Length: 303
DNA sequence: AGGATAGCCTGCGGGC
DNA sequence: TGCCCGCAGGCTATCC
Image (cartoon, rainbow, N blue to C red):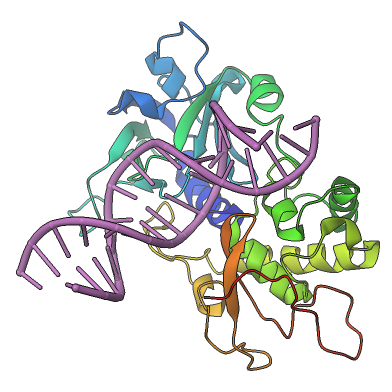
């Protein structure tokens, strides 16, 4: 669920108090949440940036990097259910289970605060890196350009070139982090709807104009969601425990069998790229729109 | 070798 | 009421 907008909103909500803070103590409550270790290397407190000062927070795609002293740091991947939260001063109703790591920090004003990494489903993890170069050459080298940081023009070209000669559906391309970083199931469906493109449209058959329209729709959707604090379907909250509100404006995601908000046609759903996908059979065509009805011949079975 | 698929993991909702 | 099953999904390993 945390995709680019959720991670970016989290980054912003963390940065105020985290940047400039010194890490007094790091505790690992569950060892196997630290991933990407070199063989034979034991986890030490410094891997969890204990003794370091936080210099900055960077994001690429869905990944967040906490950069500390001398460029060493920690990548946080939220996976499905990961959260990075300030522990509230007073008792609150927020869940206390599945906390896997905890940092005791002293901020720029000398206040002590506790940050926690919680991840019930454990699809996420923590990835230590030794330097910014190590981060870029090892942890982030397999990622394509970031879906909001990359200019629309070059991102459109990157997608079109990746789709050239490929057999894949356009939605599979959007979800492939090595082609474009940050898009998950929610925003792929929303962007395809906004651009009027069928999720199963063959990537190689989209022309430059339609790739550009798709990337513009994607960019618009992601930016609007960041501003709305992301989409909270179940567990996503920012560093302060606040929920997002972008789910209220979803046009297709989670709306299977409901009427299309644009044309009233019943929204269909089915697996595309082995993910649950929702689309409008009327607004999203497989081919460039002509006057006739879009083809439905090989659509996945509706549910 | 590209591309599709299984599996990881927990919580939750529907059905009985 | 309570149990069981299916589903959700980012990413990696594995298979075709």
